[in-house]
Image (cartoon, rainbow, N blue to C red; front, side, top):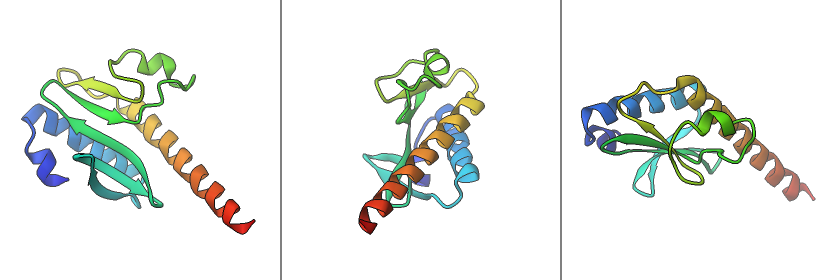
Length: 121
C-alpha cells in the first residue's frame, strides 16, 4: 500500500494518507492490502473499503449512494453507483468518510454474524 501511495502526485498522496489513517484509527484490526490494483482494508475475511488516487481526485469504494442516510451528503460529490470522488483541490470531508467507514464496519459485522448463524443451523 505504501508503494502505491508514494507513487501518486503529492496532493493525491496527502488525501490517500488521510483516508488510510482514518480507517486505521476507526478499525485498527482491519488488514491493509492491495486489491484490484488499489489500497484496501479487509476485516473478518471480507473487504471493508477500497480507495484509489488519481490526478484530480481520490475515490472511495463502495459508497452507500442508495442509502437514504447518505444520499444528500454523497450527492455533493461525483462518482458512480458505488463510488464517491473527492477532488484534490478541496479538503476531505472527514466526517462523511468516518460515517462511511462506520457504515461499512456495521455491514461487515452483520455479514459475519449471518454467516456464523448459518453455520450453526
